[in-house]
Image (cartoon, rainbow, N blue to C red; front, top):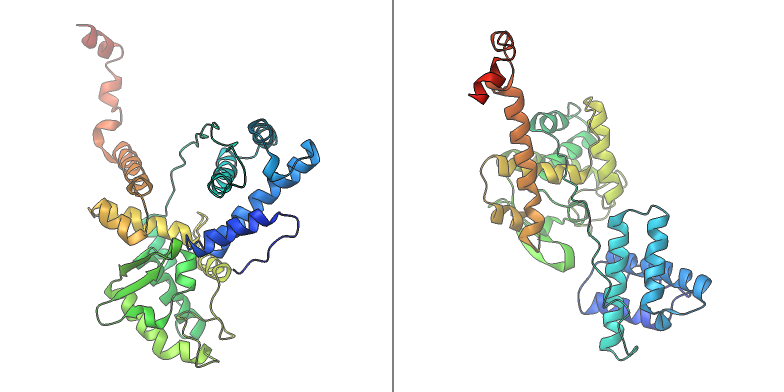
Length: 322
């Protein structure tokens, strides 16, 4: 695994993390998050109650979670900590490392639903309006953003995309997503045009090592990492005077929302995004409905009180009462 083990954690934690990697195929970043959560609880438990992770009781976990909420840690973060502990202790019980699961009776924390606020089609069009196409970097950014919007890929998926993953003839990409699950994603003619142009003109100028097979390269010929991808989005949003903060993930939200607005089937969008559950994708139906209500309120002529109706004064109330 990519992340180094912490000497502060017992062997059981490293065994647990190894299982997440070997058996469940989780990404290094996900495993690192589990490890960090367990380290946080382990440190608190040792300082406050003088116990190890293998000695924790439900009261200890309740106290810790309460302390997080007292520090105004978000409900979403506390829910993630809870999920990490629950999975860890289930592992310990199944491997006879503890006799009881101290998380068994902990109630699931309700997370307030936060709807994504994706950019509009006009804002995305403005983002994609890159004028510096004579430079290799400008052409790369154009191809990158067009493909991002055309596919809704995650930043990690776009960063790890290799030339061999793309079927150029049929415009299909084989994507390795969360949990090493593969899916097929299609892209359109516009993205295909700019991708082909970048691969033929600019990528050879960036490439330093003939063995490097990643699609999007830095000026040093290395794989473009997720941090740089986010900077590319931010840079061109600022260059085109887009006020709304944009990120690679907001473009992913735009991809899904705009498809739904155009009548695409929710199950198809789920497969394209690589969501394991349809409930994750359904959030975009709420976004589309909210936009529809807002548009109706702004545009429908009968949503505004006219001067003639104002002249009626209190007659509206009278009419309703009769």
